Image 1: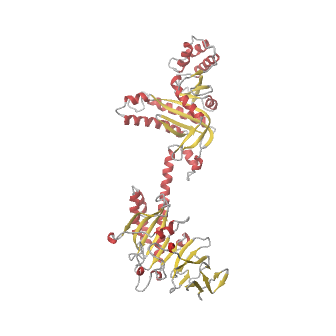
Image 2: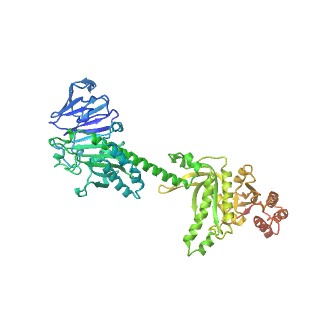
Amino acid sequence: MYEVIATNAEGHLWGRFPLLANRPLTVGRAPECDISIPHDPYVSRKQATLQLQSDHLVVSRLTEATNPVFFQGKEIDVCRVEIGQSVVVGSTILQVVALHENDAVQGFTPSAAEPAVSQVNFSSQALKKVRYPDAENRIEVLTHLPEVIAGARTEAELFVRLCKLLLRGIVNAEAAGIVELTRDDTVRLLHWDRRRETAGEFRPSRRLVQEALASNQPHSVLQVWDPQQTTQLDHTFTVDFDWASCTPVEGLSLQKTGFYLAGQRNLPVNETAFDLDRTHLDADVKFTELVSQIIGAVLKSRRWERQRSGLRQFFAPPILAALGDDLDTALLEPCECDVTVMFCDLRGFSQKAEGASDDLLGLLDRVSRALGVMTQQILSHGGVTGDFQGDATLGFWGWPFPSTDLAVNACRAALAIRCEFDSKRGRKDHPLSDFAMGIGLAHGRAVAGKIGTLEQVKVTVFGPVVNLASRLEGLTKQLRVPILLDDATAQLIRQRLPPEIGRLRKLARVLPYGMDRPVDVHELLPGEKDYPLLSDSQIQTYELGVEKFIEGDWEEAYRCLHSMPSSDRAQDFLIHQIAMNNRQPPKDWDGTIRFPGK
């Protein structure tokens, strides 16, 4: 058995046509031609005939043709074409090939007497020229597509609704299905429906599905055959149908997916499917492609919105805007950058967990609200939420985009978190009334981005600066202050953070557990108007006492620190250190307080 393969100038296949010894094929732009090429303007309405001989093809240019036929680069009127050779009409290449057994349509064995199956591969340009004979009905059906998509609560329900919609819009179709082509070329029928429930099982043609979906450029394919010669055929090539089509749909599943339709036309007596005008079938394929494009666009929009919703948990709106509508996740790849890291931890959580063993869900709700306060302020001040560790939140600034204000924004977020918790304290009717918090802020180099394994990744930050921020958060308990900064962060904000927003005071020089270098730690305080318990002059006196403490003049240090108001708990730590040593520094004193544990 032989067939003609039609390709365009770029080599894309758009049609395969069986050759029979007793039946010549006509080539032209007219729809009644056996090989109809309506999209090629350089092909005449009726241009040539192809007649199969025993082992070759005779190509004859028709007398009414106004365009030439080329063979081996020369214009011809009649020529002999051997198997494997090609002729060119317009920009279309017609090649004669032998059809081997494994190339045959699934379900029958090649022979000269077997039923012919005509195939048309549709390009988007060709479908643009197709007109709808029943446009009003199709438009009315399309108006229901939004509710079909929106009303489907599950994937299976969406498949059911789509098959029913296709049957409403394509009156020639008897059956509609959704097919999937897996990576091993297996065809799976995800769902199918028929107009007549008693008509029997619906089984798609594997070859048709592969023709439509298997290539790098999936495209709609239509196959038409003679139902009077179906005794040798199987699957959809039965007396129930005389045509079938498959149209790719993007995004319906993780594999390549398509709409599969099949139906039967009312053939006049003594005529075959090939002799009839294909206008209605071409319009049906065009309608199916339109539904496919709308479905694909909606599903893509849904995926985009889900991705964007997921990223909203990590990124502030300005960062999302910078990532763009296409969510360029290449920006999320890990990179080394300057960051300011925040660790924010709840105070008193362990005790509350022990006391709320009979209402753990209620405790979880309260903790979630507290973590929500932290997350909201991190995001609203341009930061990224990196992780939740029990009752603690990790946030950072400086990635995915560098900024000169990252430390300032981190400090503004820390002050806002403190303000939120302070405003709820003492309100017995509020879930956060008895929660307090501690915050550690550190600035330095780190790796930020998508970090993890092949199986699981998270957006977070990694490096020594993260450990330092965590240690500072832990030190807030011992130094008895809500917010601690390392010296690098303090230096960045001393001249950049307006004093009415926030103030700094140096607390001590410490060596946190597990670290090699001492760190000057500072407390971040609200402005004097918002926190009048400490005036600016009192802060200056306190910092003088800290410098005297580091220098070893503990008498002067004690005098300065002891002058602070009794409500200021930060003085207690250094005064305790001085009292334990009878106001005399150790002989090996270097100004650093060492912590033996976390």
